[in-house]
Image 1: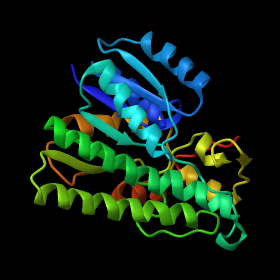
Image 2: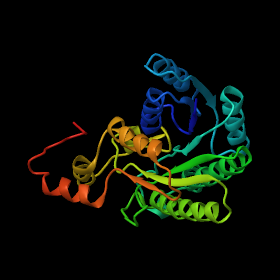
Image 3: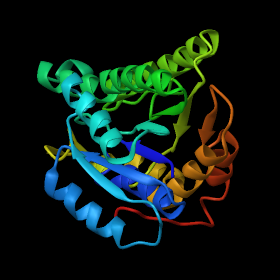
Length: 266
């Protein structure tokens, strides 16, 4: 039975992807920094249909030591790791870049960028040793070079994640590692992430124009997770990009917005 590790999977997209993997008979390793959240997620997931087992590991993916603990915990529980997903992330406060504190900047870059880099580095090293595996990093706002006041530091990190992942895929192919590297692109999701910065530390007061765009393009994470996991399960190509909100789909949403009224913020 295969195993997936998903960082930041105590809630949101990570947990929704865990549900789909579990339903497809994967062993699932849930990760979060909040132990109670993990325990609640484990209990909920274990009660759902699926032959795989559920394991939890409290770890901060901004810490190299904790990343190692997460891998070792997964291997101890299930023997190997077949898919590693760097999903953990935090949003930035809705302020201009120069208005952010050094601590806020470090938190976003440490988790959203460095966490993906170091998590990929660890998974690549270990998967080369075991002879197989797949690593997926999550795109986000800014990956396509979009810019908006209040999201530009986060966007900087995600733009870098896209470049890094494509470069890692190239290196994996050139070294014949037998490890697939790819991107998953969920688009705009309506979760706690949308309205809270730096985990749960600060509420985000979204401008009305931003809410209007989110209402047109946004989706709940359970819908997106079904699509992304299906793509990962059938993917056999290195440097693949599994994209939910394509340009065509976004254009269609805008064209039909007048007939398809949605309000996620009521």
